[in-house]
Image: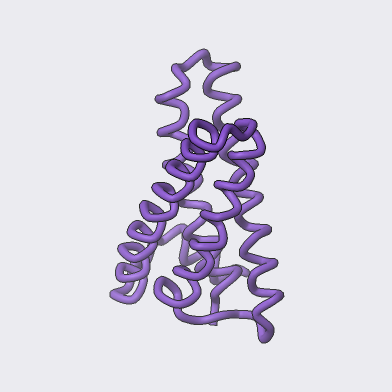
Length: 141
Protein backbone atom coordinates (compact mmCIF):
# COMPACT_ATOMS: atom_id res chain seq x y z
CA UNK A 1 0.00 0.00 0.00
CA UNK A 2 2.84 2.39 0.80
CA UNK A 3 4.34 1.72 -2.64
CA UNK A 4 1.05 2.67 -4.30
CA UNK A 5 0.93 5.95 -2.37
CA UNK A 6 4.58 6.62 -3.19
CA UNK A 7 4.00 5.97 -6.91
CA UNK A 8 0.98 8.27 -6.95
CA UNK A 9 2.73 11.08 -5.08
CA UNK A 10 5.87 10.96 -7.19
CA UNK A 11 3.91 10.46 -10.42
CA UNK A 12 6.68 8.25 -11.71
CA UNK A 13 5.39 7.73 -15.23
CA UNK A 14 7.40 5.00 -16.87
CA UNK A 15 7.04 4.20 -20.56
CA UNK A 16 4.47 1.53 -19.64
CA UNK A 17 2.45 3.96 -17.52
CA UNK A 18 2.52 6.59 -20.27
CA UNK A 19 1.22 3.99 -22.73
CA UNK A 20 -1.50 3.04 -20.24
CA UNK A 21 -2.51 6.68 -19.75
CA UNK A 22 -2.84 7.21 -23.51
CA UNK A 23 -4.88 4.05 -23.94
CA UNK A 24 -6.94 4.94 -20.86
CA UNK A 25 -7.82 8.30 -22.44
CA UNK A 26 -8.87 6.64 -25.71
CA UNK A 27 -10.97 4.07 -23.84
CA UNK A 28 -12.50 6.81 -21.68
CA UNK A 29 -13.48 8.96 -24.65
CA UNK A 30 -14.95 5.92 -26.41
CA UNK A 31 -16.97 4.93 -23.33
CA UNK A 32 -18.12 8.50 -22.68
CA UNK A 33 -19.37 8.71 -26.29
CA UNK A 34 -21.22 5.40 -25.87
CA UNK A 35 -22.78 6.55 -22.61
CA UNK A 36 -23.83 9.94 -23.98
CA UNK A 37 -25.32 8.61 -27.24
CA UNK A 38 -27.07 5.72 -25.46
CA UNK A 39 -28.63 8.11 -22.97
CA UNK A 40 -29.90 10.46 -25.67
CA UNK A 41 -31.13 7.60 -27.84
CA UNK A 42 -33.03 5.94 -25.02
CA UNK A 43 -34.63 9.19 -23.85
CA UNK A 44 -35.41 10.87 -27.17
CA UNK A 45 -36.00 7.92 -29.52
CA UNK A 46 -37.24 5.16 -27.22
CA UNK A 47 -38.95 7.43 -24.69
CA UNK A 48 -37.49 5.92 -21.54
CA UNK A 49 -37.40 7.81 -18.28
CA UNK A 50 -34.17 9.83 -18.05
CA UNK A 51 -32.99 8.12 -14.85
CA UNK A 52 -33.64 4.62 -16.18
CA UNK A 53 -31.93 5.53 -19.46
CA UNK A 54 -28.97 6.98 -17.54
CA UNK A 55 -28.62 3.77 -15.53
CA UNK A 56 -28.64 1.66 -18.69
CA UNK A 57 -26.18 3.99 -20.44
CA UNK A 58 -23.84 4.04 -17.42
CA UNK A 59 -23.93 0.24 -17.20
CA UNK A 60 -23.15 -0.16 -20.91
CA UNK A 61 -20.20 2.22 -20.59
CA UNK A 62 -18.84 0.40 -17.52
CA UNK A 63 -18.99 -2.97 -19.29
CA UNK A 64 -17.23 -1.61 -22.40
CA UNK A 65 -14.66 0.14 -20.23
CA UNK A 66 -13.98 -3.10 -18.37
CA UNK A 67 -13.41 -5.00 -21.61
CA UNK A 68 -11.12 -2.29 -22.99
CA UNK A 69 -9.25 -1.86 -19.69
CA UNK A 70 -8.69 -5.57 -19.16
CA UNK A 71 -7.64 -6.44 -22.67
CA UNK A 72 -5.99 -3.29 -23.97
CA UNK A 73 -5.20 -0.65 -21.34
CA UNK A 74 -3.78 -2.58 -18.38
CA UNK A 75 -3.43 -6.08 -19.85
CA UNK A 76 -3.18 -7.81 -16.49
CA UNK A 77 -5.26 -8.68 -13.49
CA UNK A 78 -4.77 -8.87 -9.75
CA UNK A 79 -7.51 -11.42 -9.15
CA UNK A 80 -7.39 -15.05 -10.17
CA UNK A 81 -11.04 -15.17 -11.20
CA UNK A 82 -12.53 -12.78 -13.72
CA UNK A 83 -15.71 -12.55 -11.64
CA UNK A 84 -13.82 -10.94 -8.75
CA UNK A 85 -11.92 -8.68 -11.10
CA UNK A 86 -15.14 -7.37 -12.64
CA UNK A 87 -16.67 -6.93 -9.18
CA UNK A 88 -13.66 -4.85 -8.12
CA UNK A 89 -13.87 -2.89 -11.39
CA UNK A 90 -17.60 -2.23 -10.88
CA UNK A 91 -17.03 -1.14 -7.27
CA UNK A 92 -14.36 1.32 -8.40
CA UNK A 93 -16.81 2.62 -11.05
CA UNK A 94 -19.51 3.11 -8.42
CA UNK A 95 -17.05 4.99 -6.20
CA UNK A 96 -16.13 7.12 -9.23
CA UNK A 97 -19.80 7.86 -9.88
CA UNK A 98 -20.25 8.82 -6.22
CA UNK A 99 -17.21 11.12 -6.37
CA UNK A 100 -18.56 12.70 -9.55
CA UNK A 101 -21.94 13.38 -7.94
CA UNK A 102 -20.31 14.74 -4.78
CA UNK A 103 -18.05 17.10 -6.75
CA UNK A 104 -21.01 18.27 -8.84
CA UNK A 105 -23.06 18.92 -5.71
CA UNK A 106 -20.21 20.78 -4.01
CA UNK A 107 -19.46 22.92 -7.04
CA UNK A 108 -23.08 23.71 -7.97
CA UNK A 109 -24.90 23.82 -4.62
CA UNK A 110 -22.13 24.95 -2.29
CA UNK A 111 -19.88 27.08 -4.51
CA UNK A 112 -22.65 28.20 -6.94
CA UNK A 113 -20.56 27.37 -10.02
CA UNK A 114 -22.17 26.75 -13.38
CA UNK A 115 -23.09 23.10 -13.80
CA UNK A 116 -21.13 22.79 -17.06
CA UNK A 117 -17.92 24.00 -15.43
CA UNK A 118 -18.68 21.77 -12.46
CA UNK A 119 -19.03 18.75 -14.75
CA UNK A 120 -15.66 19.51 -16.37
CA UNK A 121 -14.03 19.74 -12.93
CA UNK A 122 -15.73 16.54 -11.78
CA UNK A 123 -14.63 14.63 -14.86
CA UNK A 124 -11.07 15.90 -14.49
CA UNK A 125 -10.84 14.81 -10.87
CA UNK A 126 -12.64 11.49 -11.25
CA UNK A 127 -10.45 10.51 -14.21
CA UNK A 128 -7.49 10.57 -11.82
CA UNK A 129 -9.36 8.28 -9.41
CA UNK A 130 -10.38 5.94 -12.23
CA UNK A 131 -6.87 5.53 -13.62
CA UNK A 132 -5.10 4.91 -10.32
CA UNK A 133 -7.83 2.68 -8.85
CA UNK A 134 -7.77 0.48 -11.95
CA UNK A 135 -3.99 0.44 -12.25
CA UNK A 136 -3.24 -0.29 -8.60
CA UNK A 137 -6.36 -2.00 -7.26
CA UNK A 138 -8.09 -3.83 -10.10
CA UNK A 139 -5.52 -4.73 -12.75
CA UNK A 140 -2.31 -4.78 -10.71
CA UNK A 141 -0.19 -7.76 -11.64
